[in-house]
Length: 102
Image (tube, rainbow, N blue to C red; front, side, top):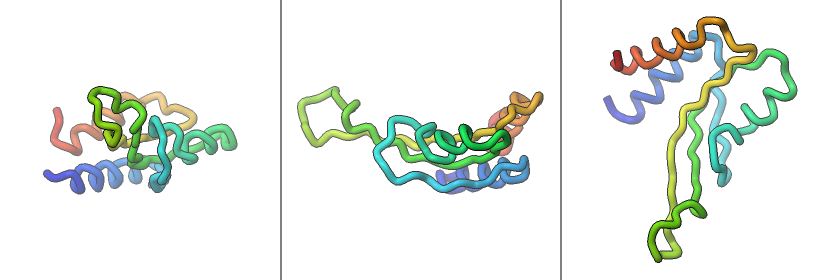
């Protein structure tokens, strides 16, 4: 399974669980929770379910080394379900099973 397969399987799974598949926010953010799909929408709406991949770029944290051009970049798959379903842990574990993790 390649990286694209992982993303597509997770997106498909969480869409079936009722999540809007949101798009990444192209900005230097320290964590996926700073995507407007999380940061703003959870404040505005009593019910909000979304899932997205966020590219997290943290060049200021790449402090190990002397090269000033260092950078760190991560991919985070973020899922927000508000209000939290009672079976959220089961849903999470099933998402891992979709990836072949048991």
